[in-house]
Length: 311
Image 1: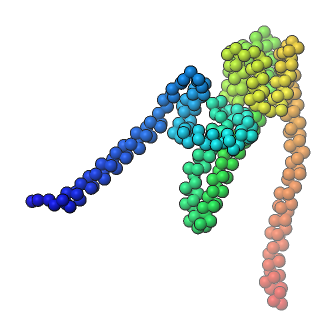
Image 2 (image 1 turned 180 degrees about the horizontal axis):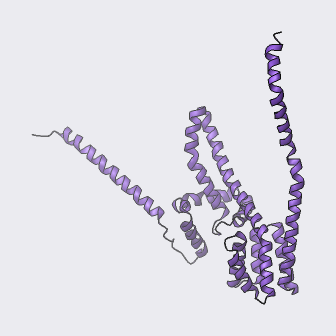
Image 3 (image 1 turned 90 degrees about the horizontal axis):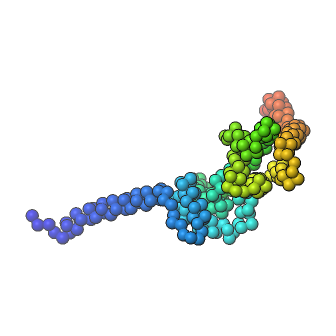
């Protein structure tokens, strides 16, 4: 039996298509495997810290590891477009307790990448609901997603600062007791950090201790904490500590005074919140009263409209 050229070509095409499909699947699998690996980038004599920072981000964040080129491109655009607001975002990254390897423009680029990845989902559902207008609404949804992720960072920073200020008086009291019992400042700080190791206040004072172990002075370590958190109350406390350090005041006395100040401020905030509660409850109370009146008088009004008007 002799096969024609057409039959040979027809039989070869499925084999070639299967082979190409297999090669494509293998190439995609190899690319995904390469992206998921956390191999360190090569370090040159210059920019050694930046390469180390990128390597740490590749280890701790899978999304950064997979989409690092896209994130870096978006980061350059963010530096050009939003340079004025990146300093505040960098402060919030530090205050929120995120890894210190993040730059503000890269974290914003990560949020933009997540929003862009959700864009097809928005287009699919909104176009099915509103037609061509859904494309415009999908763009608005993408921008709203970026804003929500940005707002989530700010909320996380505020919440962590609030937790730090709530527990800081107890840590300062522990430092005072340990130092008055004869312990050195570093030993007392090490024990206090160990006691509060699962709380943000322990993490922050742990960074102070790490800075001092790396060679920074006590003033430099506390100054770095002040700049990192950038909160008015914490700035005031650290300013008092630094001033006492310059004047030679015993740290135990400073810690006791500052813990008392924090408790007084906490009491004042509670009193302020209690005073505002009545005003805040005024509108809900009025709405509840109106709904109660409608529930009571509604049936009579409906009966009047249904039967009284016909009479």
